[in-house]
Length: 369
Image (cartoon, rainbow, N blue to C red; front, side, top):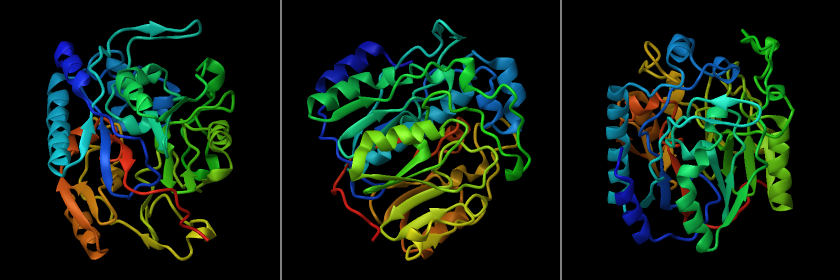
C-alpha cells in the first residue's frame, strides 16, 4: 500500500477545481480516478449470483473476505497508474482517493461484513450532476463505507462551492434482497436481486445527457432509487428508464452511452429499441468483442470493451487490444485513444467505471426537442 503520510502531504497541496459536469462528452478538465490497492474478494451473496459471470462463482465462494491475489492486483494497478499518467499528459487534473485498509471488518445491527471491496470505481459510488456530487445508496453490503476513501476529495470540492449530497443510507437488511432469487434464463423469467424495500442505486446505472438522464433498473438499482434521484434533481432534469434486455443487469455504461450530441453507443445484445426521443440520433452499434476475459476469473462480461470514456466530443479512450472497435470508432468519425485495461477489467470495470469526471467545460443544455 502507498504510504498514507505521503498521501496526506500530497492532499495538502491539492488544488480543487469547481465541480461542473452535465454530460459524458464536454471537454474534460478534472477527473477522479480510482485505486485498486488491497481489493478484497466479495463474500457470496444474492447480489453476486445475480450479476457475476458464473465462471467466477466458485472463486467468490472460496475466497470471500480475503484479499485478491497479489499478482492480479499488481497487474491491474500498473494499468490504472499508467492510465493516470496518460490523462495528466493530456493536461487533465487527476485526483485520487486516499488509500484505506479494505480488510477491516465492520457490522451494522442487522448484518456484518469481513471487509470492503475497493475504491477502484468512483463511477459506481458517485453521480455528478452539474455542481452536485451525489453519494449513491449502493446495494452491495461490502460497499457500505466505500465513499470514505473519497472523503478528503469531497470536502475539498465542497469548500470550493460544490453541492455534496448523500442519498438516504440504506439498511441493507434481508428484506431488501430476493430470498427466492433464481437466475433468469430469459427476460420472460426476469427477476431482480433487490426488492423495493428501500431506495438503492449504483451511480453507474445512470447516463447523463444534459437535462435528460437515462437509467436502467438492475440488480443493484430499484424503482425507488430511480424515483429518489428524480425527486432530488427536481424539474430541471428528466430521468428516463431505458428498456434493457439483460438477464444479469448491473450498470448501464457498457449497454447505453451517449457519446456526443446526436450520437449514442448501444449494445446490440441488450438494446432492442430506444425511446422515440432518439429517432433523430445516430445509433452506433459496436462490433462484438474479440477478446475473452471470461475463461478465468472476471467480474464482468466481455462487453466491458464497450465501456469507453470521452475526453471531448471526438477523443475517446478505447481498449487497445480490441482492434475492430478501434477501427469502428475511426469510421464513426471519432479519434480513439488506445490504452489497455484488460487486467483491471477483471475487477469489474473499464475506462468509464474507474473515472468520475467532476469538471467538463460546458453548461446545462437540452439535447432533445
